[in-house]
Amino acid sequence: MRKEFQLHDRREFLGNAIKGAALLTALPSVRARAAERAGVNPFAYDLSRLEKTDPKLISHEEVRRWRVSHSDARRIALAPDGQLLVAAGNYLTAFSAEGERGFEIALTEPARAIAATDDGLIYVGVRDHIEVFDAKGQRKATWDSPAKKTWFTALALNGNDVFAADSGNRVILRYDRSGKIVARLGAKNKERNIPGFIVPSPYLDVEIARDGLLRVNNPGRHRVEVYTPDGDFELAWGTASMGITGFCGCCNPINLALLPDGRCVTCEKGLPRVKIYNERGEFESVVAGPEMFPENARACASKGLGDCTQGGLDAVADAQERVFVLDLVTSDVRVMQRKA
Amino acid sequence: MSEKSKAEPTSRRNFLRNGTRIAAMTGLGALGGVLASRSQAENWVWQIDPQKCLRCGNCATKCVLEQSAVKCVHAFAMCGYCNLCTGYFEPEPNALTTAAENQLCPTAAIKRTFIEDPYYEYTIDENLCIGCAKCVEGCNRFGNGSLFLQIRHDRCVHCNECAIARTCPGDAFRRVPASQPYLLKTTHAH
Image (cartoon, rainbow over all chains, first blue to last red; front, side, top):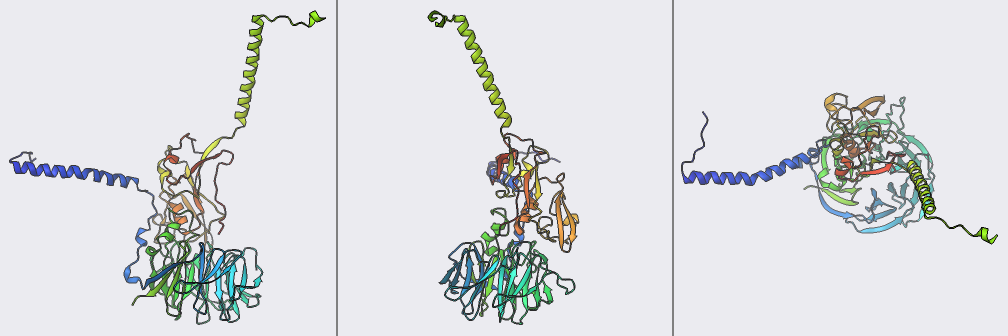
């Protein structure tokens, strides 16, 4: 039975009038919402659910932040005396953990790799060759470019060895301190069961752990690989996943750092995040999630100027397990300390 | 002699006749010149600057053609031939296979071909591509941006006022000489 609309008294009339007025007021906002919905890109590449980190997984908090003196920051390294060395633009600059600026070395080209020794020497990878400076910033040596497509992206020191990651040729070069190449590590070799590095964008990092073995990222295979200094492939860990326990996108992790106890800190681009894995390669915690680096994430997303080869993060850890995260887009260094 | 050198007075009729002839000749000459210069002049066509493209999706929906003249193109020299291509796969695929639920493209316009472990080649089927830029965003978001959009001139009807250009939020549309109708990406300068 259809109910007929009939007014019985003034109170009912007023009540209905108020309801009608409320409906008329609400209509434009409903319309606006519909229009807004109509303007949304129906083909959007949506990663919003992955851009927030579960707070329970975050082990560190930011205690300080400072900006390096030059733009185009690329790498951060820790000198034996505790100073942080940052390569940005055509400069290599030393900073204290608090961000106080120390010495600075002007370079002829942007530096992409840094390592410092106990005796005060600083090794700098400049595109296709390595330069050696003393503590006063005087150039002591320039090593020749080893190959045509060389593109150095990382350096690591161990005793008399200098390991240099050549992302252009997808190998780790082992030099002695005089600049002579002793070995080439990591090139694909079926007989030695070496899978070879897959490096779609110029991010190949090398670190030396306290066990004397090399940790190298293999971004195209979404894992970290372990090699002996002689180039024997020992093991690998890591999985491809947008989820927090894996490595996201086409090619991650891009950079590595090691904590004093051997745990590994990994840096990713696209979804800029820094995480810690234990020595067995099991995910442990998040140092910093994508929500901490909005500009870095934007550099790769629609609002950015280009693609994701300009984004990303680098990190280094000190003896107090503080993680210094360098944002390659904003040139900020964030000092991350384990939560109490 | 002096009498012969004296010019004969011109009649008004002759003056007008000669004037008309000269004006007609001049006009014909000018017309010929204009036509000749027009035949040599450069035509201009619309194209997308891939460095300005924001991957907004308008190219798929605003073109006057039923299926947009904008297509995804692939700079193979830049491509990493990744196993996990973020231009091909959904952000969280069930598996790295060609199953429909794993593919990012709404029309399955990208073909994945195994090359050698762990490399795969990705090619665009332009008959299926609608120019939505979803794959372009996926590629740029994590990779080096080897996938990008271009107007395909075998399909474009060359509207004087391009309907997509009018709404492009990145101001990425511009006119380019018809002799060089594409703005292609080349290998990345790191």
